[in-house]
Length: 397
Image (spheres, rainbow, N blue to C red):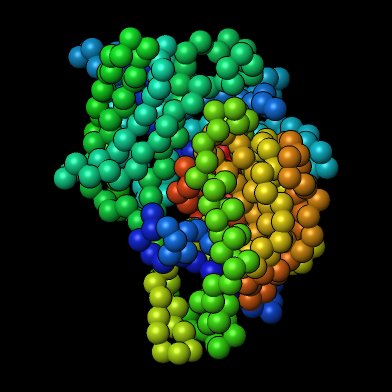
């Protein structure tokens, strides 16, 4: 029997596996393995930390190509100071394998999948930088505001160039395959605007599909909106859709929150819930469920600021960590918390212990990432593939 998530949002709401880098003047259920839900996003409703590695353009990718146009490059493998890929960095009470960064996809690479992200870097003095992905009809598929690579006046990366901007563009898990147009707008203080365009292809990706019958009790839990639940939804959405330029700056390496590799649910699993009253609802899963017993230590996937640590109706004991402006990791259904709101944590810091609180069919950890409110694949960050990799194999392929 496959246990399932019960609090997903309706379908249609809309690793580092593809990391296209555009850079400046060169855009160069009772048993272990229970299923939880996605929380309440949006459910029909509408300080600074030094990174141990930095998102960096591939050497030589900072110059325009032969046409004089910006070129797409990828992240270089930039190990933390004093470390090399494969070494272990000690963080709090656990060892964190260092995985490095993905190899270059080539100067004109432009393929990405649903649930992945595109990282855009602009080395240029500007007032504002914005990235927009458009479909063949000119309709917006995704958009992202850029932030300065370091917090202004508080440099966190030695040698960081003044004026460098970074945007993390989330590709919706529901995005259709096909060619897309990526526009990067650079707004300058003198009022001028530069619009750099690149073609990006969204490749087709198959996701698991299933039907899930719910009994009367679980139907009520999924479909009943109480004032408390509504307040919690509004609070969480306000966090996940926020964009604070003064947020922490952490670029990796990212780690998995538990040592287990068995997954009871995958990112973006498609589901049709059949309620006890005869109605149904089509949804998708926003994160990954790890089949771990109650009491399993749960660690932060990266450095950041704890922006939420509380018990919620549907997600139980919940922790949300902010890693970059608009980038958050979430941990649901914990049995106990050790982190508190306002606390700065490191990759590998203990956040709590897994459980089955909230709307869950059994003990497990639900883990997800949000980028500008959009749910993206945690494997894009941590580097896994289909549950085959864990902490010991977090290097991007």
